[in-house]
Image 1 (cartoon, rainbow, N blue to C red):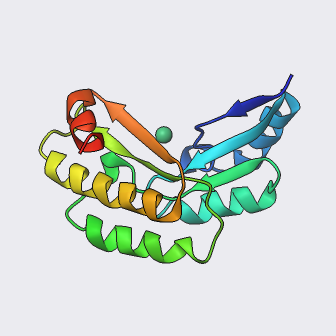
Image 2: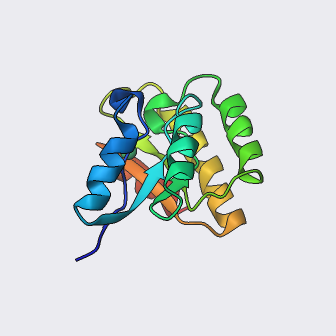
Length: 144
Ligand SMILES: [Zn+2]
């Protein structure tokens, strides 16, 4: 049986030194396809390296995780957007809203989410959404 992992951060520094062997173990266990949603600027290079090492198995997505939306999010998003024409991405994300860790950044998270929804529409790509304790706020954005 073939499995698809729709959301894994095996490129994360938390797996440093074990990233590729973790992917190999997943493949050996029948998980033949893995979608890799990006987190922040620092995670882009390890994500693309992992995807390049397993081009038939690992499919990267580009986006800014809601927990990593800071005051400079517009600059970060501009840098990410510039990469879209240089690499193959299979989705936009990980984006969304997270009110578990930080409620004060909600206005910034919403703006970041809206920008990334715009990319998904423009590029006709699916969007990978993170939602934690934020469903009302999230649907308010998605329905408008
Ligand atoms: Zn995630």
